[in-house]
Image 1 (tube, rainbow, N blue to C red):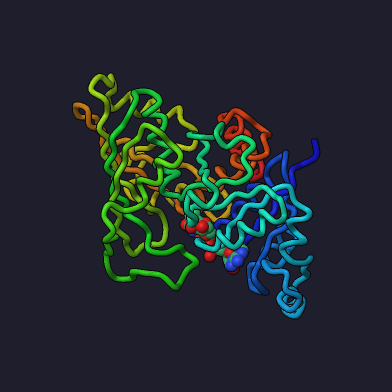
Image 2: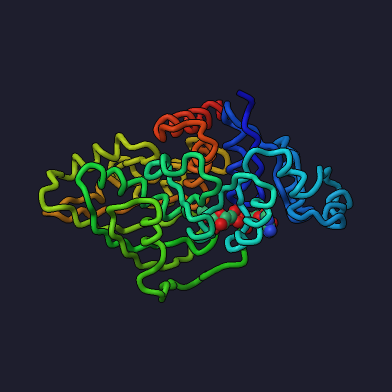
Length: 345
Ligand code: NAD
């Protein structure tokens, strides 16, 4: 079977990472990436050997790339005509207008967590609803926070049954490459209570009743979740069995703050840089083993999310779901993760 041709519309924080992850896979190629106009991101596309297109079909927009010294292959319509699927990595809330273009082109499409579930009526996380997404024409990979919640809560629900969850999200203020957001010297609660973040999990996973509060803090790398789960009365779990469960869960890393000397997100990201993925990414959700406690039917824990990268491998699995390339989510996750690992050697 020929490689699947994947278009990436929007080559920013998420788009460049998804493009590299696609390049690492044995069953797909990047047909092209788009930029709005000439900028340093175009040099990255050239360096990675990715065909460059313009986000619009307007002739003067396309010509601006040549004027800026970049070789451009055409507009979005040209790219879509040469592709089997498009991963939309445009800034949040541009989905509706891009959705129309994808429908007109008759191409399968994947949006990101900045869009709402009802844009396509489908959402995706590898461990919770791969099978529901098989053959779908469009979906949305849920946000970095929702992906993180799914990774640790879905296996728990599968083991013990329905869960009731309260989560406080301590969120990074801005991405490292974003100088336009804050707060810089403040701790800023999200005054919409409960926040939308936790309940978004219910778009991909049944049997988890969840509410959340969120607060933004002046860091640029990682979110931390403080989570309290009410387990069913007869749950049969203790701290060790919960850790064993997560130890066998793909894309979850559990380490000790004390013994492994990883007391904060700073050390988590240093460890991620040691792994050697591009940009120092950490695709896995990080759980502090010494921050986990089962007390009666309450489980409490902390987890950290590398916001720029945990959704990246999920996009690869979502491509396989929509194109029905792999029906078993675990098999897709294994192939995605091993291929990314092999590409680093
Ligand atoms: P970004 O701003 O870093 O990158 C977006 C890119 O899209 C930029 O290169 C921009 O020039 C380009 N663009 C602008 N208008 C466009 C258009 N009309 N069509 C196509 N591309 C266009 O944004 P990002 O952080 O990569 O976010 C992309 C999506 O991923 C959003 O939905 C966001 O909510 C979601 N997301 C972001 C993060 C994160 O931490 N950055 C994490 C998870 C999900």
